[in-house]
Length: 546
Image 1 (tube, helix red, strand yellow):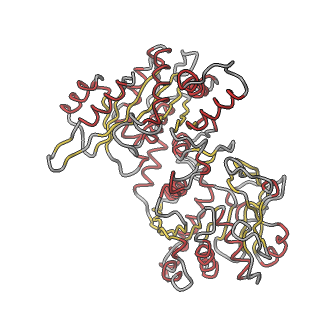
Image 2 (cartoon, rainbow, N blue to C red):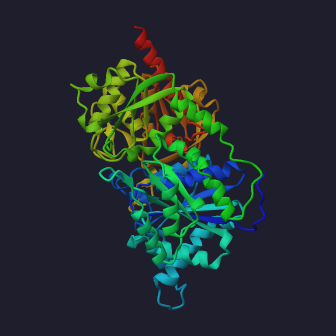
């Protein structure tokens, strides 16, 4: 077991330079996975520099997916990476924005907490950042807390976070903190060589802010020769063993293995004065990678959504298909279908060769008709269907219009004057005026009906899943739906909210009000995704046999 000599947690700060989108979250998650596999208790938190209190009101085109935790926090999508890699839940404390920091400070000022003092960035804002940065480490639950700082070194927005890290480094013992700086070593094709100057400038900016990186993780398309590592170490004032190569990888799930080869975890433990008797044990991870890279089958799943131009808007769904595909030894090829492009006259052309269709979550009226048309086609043609949140609601509307004959049935979100509001605003949402953080958020219980497909998939009657919505199935219509063959397979035991609908006499037709993709991890793929891929594979094999 790992030695736990320290009374409080050690802190690792992950920063980035040169450019955004280098993968700080993946490096942080990979390092955390390696340390966890050595027996240490690890958590990761993300500090975002934008002024929104949380990403809940951001358009997916702005910020990608909004990830939701069990405790109802609307967070950055990197928290999804943290959970998928570590197989542990995060919380509100794991994602803090500049907006939340300023909101907390201004609230305290209005309450008179600062005794009439002038409220300033230093010390009041930095003290609030520091309180949040150290919060998880003081719980006694963790040996190591990894903090990812959003943005790049040199960004105006990130300066208070960087200053706070400088203060923490100054106040703590040297071996209690560690800065891992992710940077880029670009390859100039015309010159035929790798260039270190951007990294040197990035480190120089850190130095100007009073920080010196302890470890440099260098993203690169080509291997770093010994001479180049030596040059980087010399000009950036780090030891050569602290220059870590991060080669581009076929999948993010290769990165922990690459970082183990580069001994990133060993270097971090050495510099934190920590000792572990065991090496990193990644046998289960290696099994997953083997299944991922060497599938026995390939299927094509149509993902119908309204934000398909930005794949990060569906990040957790994409990763859930990767997990479920590996479990079924099947490669899942996602066919991206914009719901606005779907019409009655082209749906067969787009869908006839698909092995399954997932109608994705979303908000607003745009693209709704296309989603309804997609569901009609898969329902009538026996193609495996999976609807998530809005996808389930559209399945309800499609069934009401085309099976029950309620031709004007709709959701009150899109048409509050519809004569048949089969999807209605939740009672506790009717007096809500503020949009931020007021939806039905977080984990809620669901009781499955015995004998249902969902009960067979989960293998138990009581489950808990994460939600993010304001509208619900209108139970006034429940008897009408069930008599016609659309069954409520899962209900909330407290308010009887319909959580899952299933269609009788169909190979696989499930709609869920919750977001199962938010609980799928590498080592625990979500059972609904695993089953959907399994049924889609069976549909594929049947079509091949014809």
